[in-house]
Amino acid sequence: MSKFANSLEAYFNIVAGLPVSYEDRRFVTGGQVYGEGNRIGNNLGSVDIALEYEGTGGHWLVYRQSVYEDGSLYYLSNISDGLSGISWQNKKGRQGIRKIVVEYLQTSNQGGPYSARIGLNYLRGQDNYFNNGVYEDGWVYRRQTMGTPFVMPLRYSTGLPLNEEPLQSLNPYYIFNNRVQAFTVSVQSQIQRVSLTTRVSNSRNFGNYRVDYPLSVKQLSLQQQVVFPIRQYTVLTTFAYDNAGLLEKNLGVSLLVKRTF
Image (tube, rainbow, N blue to C red; front, side, top):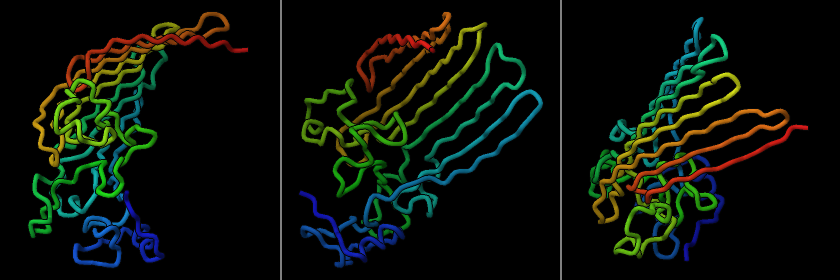
């Protein structure tokens, strides 16, 4: 059972994000240094940079989010990781393509395979995104990863042989596959009174630096949403498909009918 530091000093360290060395004994819990020689709590975030352009024909947005978790970004050792995207929104007319978003997510570097424990502090590798040495479920709320759908708990990786070692011994909500390269395209369009939203994603999944299980799996997912009005009703249908990869092969259809009074 995990034990957590509960002093006022520990609270200040959480809020301020102050580092804790491996030799620091102030926050010892259960014989271990709380925070694994990093920081108390589960500290992570992103540095966001964006550029907007408002043209006569459309609105452009180019952005970059760089992720940090343990100091790798400070040393630029994980600078290749992050979310890069560009979007365009049509300002002319209401028919045809209304908006396009193209994004590329990379989390596969994580500062490299070597952590600072080997004595070279600037390496700061094995970031192990969305996991934490004390909080066993990591960056998960109600069994779902917060932040991105491409980095999911182990139990949802239904295309993997979850009954094999060492996967069987892991917490089912452990973020086993957090080294990802994913490319996504989303298009919103309008044809007469019919609204269409198309999403296509293609990802390569490389598992986790800290689990000795080789993984290099491709995953393709498609989603088509169609919305159209019929008198006082609005009908929304969604078609979704996953190929066999990180996920098992899936085909799904949903139907929603809404009436406006």
